[in-house]
Length: 188
Image (cartoon, rainbow, N blue to C red):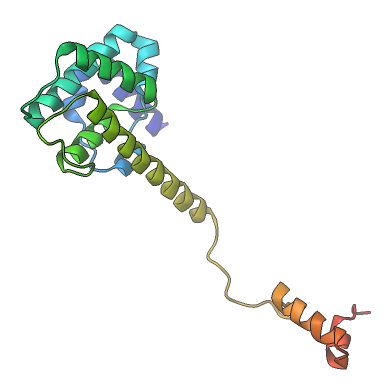
């Protein structure tokens, strides 16, 4: 229930003060994204409306574009078009995703912009981010699965053999080895 309460608090702040929420969050990695309250832009679009989420996304994207300081900047139509495409392609992204994505872009993880930022460049970077995100999700899933398994047993059970050992034994027995023939017999 603690996790549910945290999520509800995050939802309330995000819905009432979205830019304060944006400024307050500081995920450092994609793993942090998966440990944050998963409030997707698709969910916000359904609850608050398309116009509301677009307005927030315009502020978020414009703050990134301004911080990036390029010689060629995007106009309002390009920003709106890019946001529509992002919302269409990545409705499962959270604000934490965008924070981590913008940090990674600024650090050069997805290549250089060569003094220009536009929709196709941003969407290309997002595809690369999405691949990183999928890989991290897979790794976290494997880690979680492995945490449910006990440590691998190195102790061999008395009287048991592996399948490979059985196949070797069977082959020797088929060649007439009496000892191996006896070992293959079912105990009485």
